Image 1 (cartoon, rainbow, N blue to C red):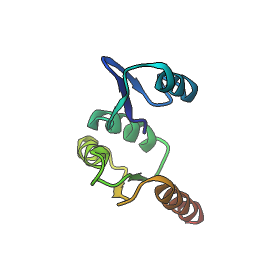
Image 2: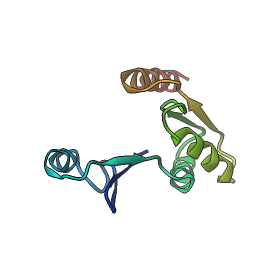
Image 3: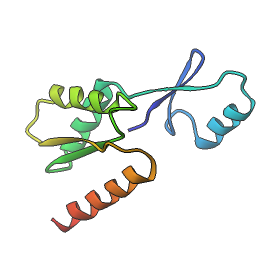
Length: 113
């Protein structure tokens, strides 16, 4: 789920509306430094509805809620999804490589049943 990047009044979805190269180019040369904003609950609704057509269940793992509102947006999005696909939203309580390792392990567990 991409976060939103804001350069002044311009808003981009990370790696959707702006590439890594474009981001780093702007970061290097633009006098306006970016801020980030978490995805909206509706962003999660859209993704959960799409995934629920392909999956028996969804595990949605996010960076610590102590540093970002992403987890709360995911919880709100889950509440708005009305189909029967179970959704588990997880606050990883971590960031960086630690969340990556958590996601890799969860993926392995899901594949092994």
